[in-house]
Image (cartoon, rainbow, N blue to C red; front, side, top):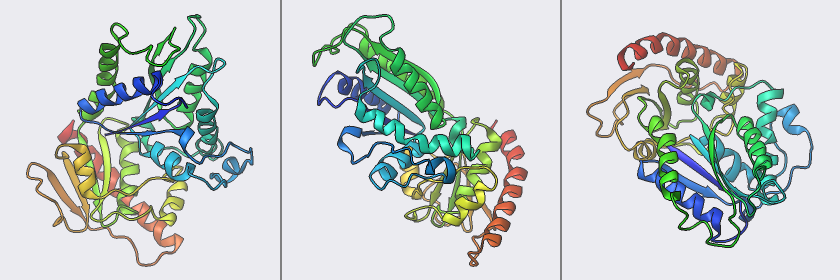
Length: 329
């Protein structure tokens, strides 16, 4: 599983940095793969209210938000936002990042597209503030709540600490590391312990992505559904994304993954694997239920051909899921 940390503090090696680093290390100790992004260090322009995201579903501003923001958020099982309090809210750098996630809000609420990963993605807040006021974190928590909603993540909790101002104030606080370990375990272990269904295609750019989306809708978070390619494509097929949007499913910014990388990140064998085509590429998986589906991506790149492919995959997934629930449930 993948845990994305968003470091909201512009201060180097400050209390937020210590807090987030400790939290992600705790997640890693339970088997998670983690990554941190620092909005302060990225080339991310503020939202200019162009309204393109609400009308067409994308942000026209060309900067690092596409690769280091949208794609990583879509990949994440858990998003951890770490922030100090600046005037009762998050710092401007991370607020700019959050504002640009209006793109997700537009796709979700204006274009009525559903993120198939919404059934399992979670959001968690880490916060520090200099004063001891009772309402210190209200603004930060409200911002986090609506940020998590926009990215289709369930807001599952927070750890916030008052009277933390000078660098290092958080270190050595009684019970801190135990609180972090407990919260991380509560987040990570249920996801890691889920039964896993893996769809494998040649490049993880089309058939596997479609099948996984329909499967995620069907199992509603009961199982972890993954995709992989024997060799990962650079990006998902644009026509595939378009025809899935006709089913109100949002597969934009899904990143194809190689089979090797997915298995390494999973840390164990998946429980069930479906190959689009031959399963000869199955590397050393001995206790896995594997099958082949004779559905292939059409050579004809027309919209009609992709619609036919999509519908065939939807029927096959809906026929398959009941037996999966019986065998793995």
